[in-house]
Amino acid sequence: MTFKSEKEIFVCQLRLFLVAAAAVAALAVPGAVDAGGTVTQPLIATVGTKASPEDPVISLTDSTGAKVTHLDTGAYTITGHDFATTHSFHLLGPGVDKATGVETTGDTSWNVVVIDGTYRYFCDAHPTTMRGSFTAGLVTTPPPPGRARQATKGRALQHQGEGSDQGGQLPPRRAGRQPANRR
Ligand SMILES: [Cu+2]
Image 1 (cartoon, rainbow, N blue to C red):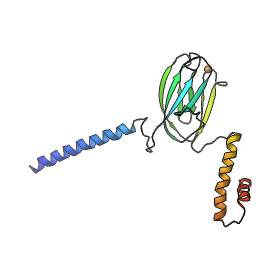
Image 2 (cartoon, rainbow, N blue to C red):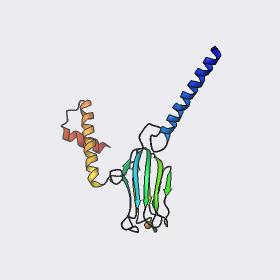
Image 3 (spheres, helix red, strand yellow):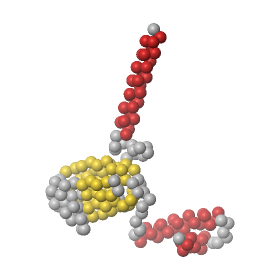
Image 4 (tube, helix red, strand yellow):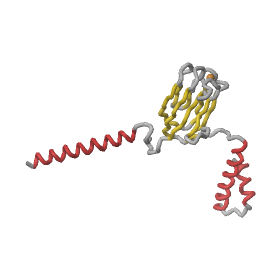
């Protein structure tokens, strides 16, 4: 009698375990949540345009339509739109090598894991004229002039804080300039 009920309890627990395991497996499916618990971000890769399929344009944007220049590391789902029969979309970088066909059109969906590094995308038929790139994680490209000023400002502000920690009596303007020279 005791045996039987224990067995029943065991079966019941086993069932619960299987249900839980299935739930975890569902969460682990690419496109939902990555190993770090980060929600997968959607990206859109496009080559050609719907209106003018063979236009030599290639782009990688985020869900808001903004061009991707830098990504956090993690899992991404890239939806690809290849409108052209003379172009391809090829993404190449650390751990990633995905491409559509030059002569084929269609939509694709790629699950990729982005790590620190520089990623390039280009058309295999026109790699020097149809191309773009982005950096990820700890890797950053030398920012364009507009952003460089912002970055410097940010750094100066940071150092102001550090300066006051060191008990420096320097006026903020100087405190900001000094570390820039030091680095
Ligand atoms: Cu091309």
